[in-house]
Amino acid sequence: MSNREKGFTLIELMIVVAIIAIIASIAIPNLLSARLNANESAAIATLKNISSGQSQCQASGVIDVNSNGSGEYGFFGELSGKVAVRNGTQTISPPVLSTAFGNIAAARVTRSGYLFQMYLPLVTGLGVTEDAAGGDSDNGQAVDPSQAETLWCCYAWPAVQGNSGKRTFFINQAGDVLSTNHNGGTAYNGSTTAPLATAAFRAGTSGSLGVAVAANTVAIDGLTWVVVQ
Image (cartoon, rainbow, N blue to C red; front, side, top):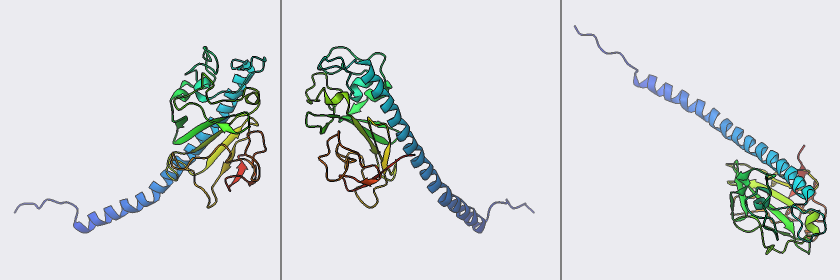
């Protein structure tokens, strides 16, 4: 009499599949949450590095469009050494930011699931972005050299809202990182919904880069921005 081959019964296979499904339902959300937290932490750290790079750029005086001896803040293309500084032929060498910030598309840099965009002031104080491919060597964006000695700001928001991140972040020359959870308002999301230069400044103001930011108060975009501790 031959021995029958032994294997899993249908019921046993169903039990195994059910167990795997339960484990996956617990693990996958935790993994997604961990990725979101990691991306948001990386965005905060990146903004702090950008602030440090801006300080180095301004202190060095390498950008001095009005030739008054006071340095000015720069765009990503300039800070990364990708392009020549405004109204000049030299590049910042060594660059004050990683050369990865030279990978600019539509005036934005993408890193760890977040989009980053820099603003410098016009003569009116309103913010303007760099050229689409980075920098502004001929100052065609009309950055005001006097105001660029003291003002700049940068935003970071999720490339895919809810997938690569949830919160949006902001930093300027003051060095404090602000964030917003959107609180039912505008959810900044990739190229679909991006923050304007005025987004994080106090409601009821012109949105000039020189006015107070909306730390713990309602901003021009209708959201409440809080200081990241």
